[in-house]
Image (tube, rainbow, N blue to C red; front, side, top):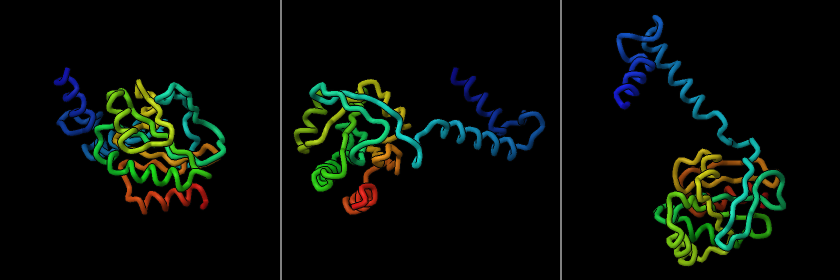
Length: 185
């Protein structure tokens, strides 16, 4: 199976002597690369597009729904308990959630498929999370946002439109600057 996949990629990327229907290797590689990029980007939530709708339970079984207009802006934080950058940004999330509580909701979405519930609960206790911790048990929501790394933060305006997708952690200063802009504070 791997040999077949390697052969298909070799031919389709124009690296071999076969090429694709007489096109130059550079033309073929550029077209393949472009269409691969387009395929990866298709359906991916981007800034300026509505947030995908979803509902998830929190640690206590309460259901939270995202999608459409909201009373407050929203920071969705996709994370896992074993993720070192998630541990680094956790205190900043707690601080920002308290500081902007009048204009911002923070939902910590644990991608539980890659975690263990006991570790999730310990993380939440250790870092003093006071905002909802939602459980994405089947990775369905993380996939909707085309998650590729932890942490991933999605900033959503009151209008339900994605303002920014941040892969990786930010300094407290940079995070606060983005939240001020999001909440118009």
